[in-house]
Length: 416
Image (cartoon, rainbow, N blue to C red):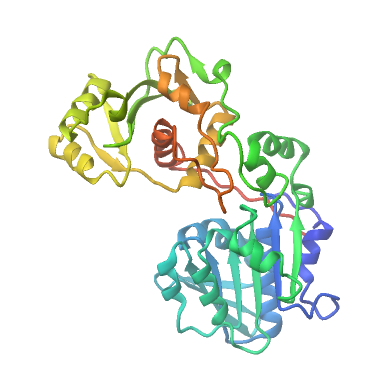
């Protein structure tokens, strides 16, 4: 891990609560902005340091979208740093808390996931002396407000960090725009606020995103999505006439429709790239005839031919078609991961890095790329529900297969 001095913005986040700081009277801190700006690790170190400077034998909470992602993205690097600072950390995996001790002081830090509306019930009943919410913009408001209500101990404070979303997001309107009335210190981070990032790494991240995601993740802006969803798609760089001679594995992705079109794509992997080798696209409104599950299954078999298909990734709402595939017993069927915005971002990343390539014969896919747009005047990020069927099956595939195992790495800076 490369050691460098903290930036001015990182130092402010680390020390805002200290007795010598002019910001010590705030009840909360909000850190938002660009990815890889160092805000998460600095905040978690600061949160634990503050807790040990004020409390003994008390309960705190660190929250993420899921406990799994929280352990991976926050807890693991935090514990590494705490150990280097002579803290003793004992993880209680079955009970989802960490017992942390420094000299003669010890406190408990409970881990919670706020992935949906039902998560609010998980944090009810506990009394907290402080709360840190990592990626708070990805959590439902009900969970966040229930968590805040748990902080009833005198001297408790709130800690929020996130990357930007759309400008109508509840956290932006209720906390960032009202930071002053909430008595919250607002710190906006850019990539340049992390001195551990080299110029080459900065350039890599600046080239990784485009459109709305560039404005949010690189520039750190809360902006409305508009225009084409995949403006980075270009025929000259993302299409091919001659497929690879062989592929290491094959998948099929499917967006199933009865009234709406059904779209299936055959994928093969070769040399780290995914090729959409062929497609099946049927619009019942155009052909003036509906098809049964069995007819779509026959179309699936025709698309696959004699290839060894590892799995068929299907729209999770298509229960009858999933059961039809299972009943035939020829292909493994997997309900797709259907997080729309995460999937769109991941498809954007894959296109930007040229991991996805499309046969020139996939006419409906190519057509939809030029027509798939954000819904205008929507109070949030919402793709227009037109020309989105091949786009959905591509998103299912990327979300479920291409990004199934993502490498995560962390950068930090510390004073020697």
